[in-house]
Amino acid sequence: MSVDTLICAATRFEAARQIGELPDGHPSARLHGHGFVVQVRCALPAPWAAFEGSEVQRLHQELSAAVAPLDHHLLNEQVAQPSDANLSRWIARQPALPPIEQLRLQSTPRRGVDMDSAGHAHLWRRHVFQAAHVLPRVPAGHKCGRMHGHGFEVVLHANQGIAAAISHDDIDAAWAPLQAQLDHACLNDLAGLANPTSELLSSWIWARLKPALPSLSWVTVYETASCGALFDGERYRVWKELTLDSALQIKRAPEGSELRRLHGHTYTLRLHLSAPLDALMGWTIDFGDVKTLFDPIFTQLDHQPLHEIADLPDCDTASVARWIFAHARVQLPQLDRVDLYETEGCGAIVLAPGALLALPV
Image 1 (cartoon, rainbow, N blue to C red):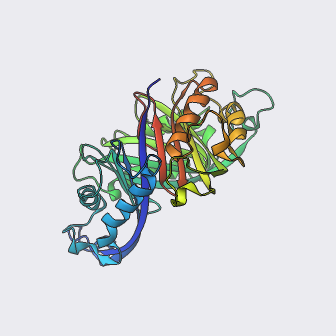
Image 2: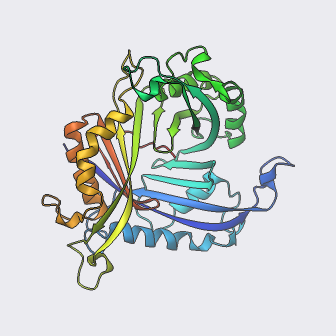
Image 3: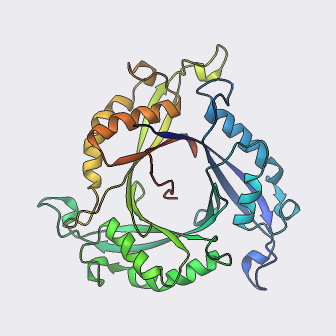
């Protein structure tokens, strides 16, 4: 199967801003500051970096240089109305950066914007609720068949291309009635949630929120920090996140490059799976099954020297991500995307044709 590879880089900057277009009395209309995080995902031409395998390093350098004029500055000096969306567009226009498939700007841990290659800005807002649930249809002995609970997180995306005036405040207002129903509740007691899997919870939220928020793009539900589900009105996606502690040397790196030296990373690996909903179970696949089926591959990578894997041509992050994708699909045919980050936000995404680029935040 042919796959697409995106190279990712992320950086942080500290800046002040004042958004004058907001109503009087709005907190963001006053001079204030944020610790911003920006990530870009790019399909890079070859050759683009000094050598194959150094793309992540170079993209990080270019992104850091592009946002340097913003760091510890007043953003209004560069962008007249420095909203999250306008600031994202300014960064995407910087000439040193390659064409961007997706740009993510986080202004706080609970809000930001994802901008696609067409320039459409999807504002996002993160909400948290505490709830209990039980999955009544799991096999006997399954831990989710016992009453338990989670600190759920929900990330809502809304497309400014559909409603240009949409704001984070509008997302909050639309969400408020659902927050009142879900927080400190037993999900099974709510109408339509007799079997509250992450997948069914995401579509339950979609059905109730879409009429009040027509620009809603997708709903992401975090059941835990490492797994959850996404629904965009048509398709379900689930993911399972793992960490790998591995050593490596990039064989193609020239003498003198730090990438040629033996070093290591704590990788963040995210496996994305997309499949029709199982009508009986109410999920696409059991998160526990994903972990079990992937475990033989995990064992080959975790606490291992990646450069000694016989069929891995090199161990730059993109090559490792493609290797994981090819091997994992044998046991997990639902897999259509692999994200592998060597440091925060810096790494590679491998996608099957037609895979959804939208990510959990």
